[in-house]
Length: 149
Image (cartoon, rainbow, N blue to C red; front, top):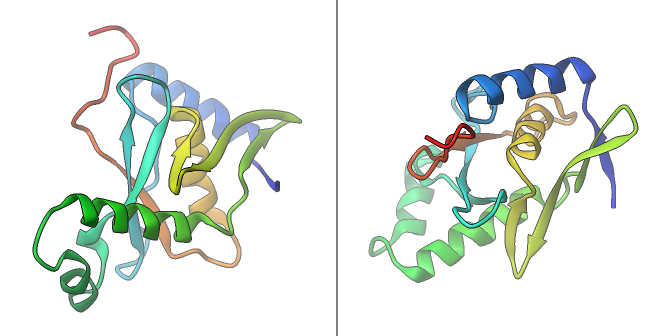
């Protein structure tokens, strides 16, 4: 179980951003060839699920994956591809010796422990060497405000 060290300056920035907006701080796409991972908040907990963003795939690959359109089988495949994408990444995010988040795979589905962990994953994907070619995009639809609005 490897850990990624997250700088305290980034943690402060991510926490300040979350307090101000109710959304995790994530970096956008860096290169046109980068593949996106969609992050969906779980309405019943603080966890976030990851699936592959088909709109960031090359056209021929997107067509092959989408096939006959949206289905349960499609969601399973998109989740599977996201699991493969994060497989070699650290499962823990640590700042100044304290664990600040986790990336876990449960029943073949990649989850992040909370919004801070999502920001840490975004930081890791931006700064990881060798370059991962991945980025995270937050799905806005069911975001809860931390202020209860």
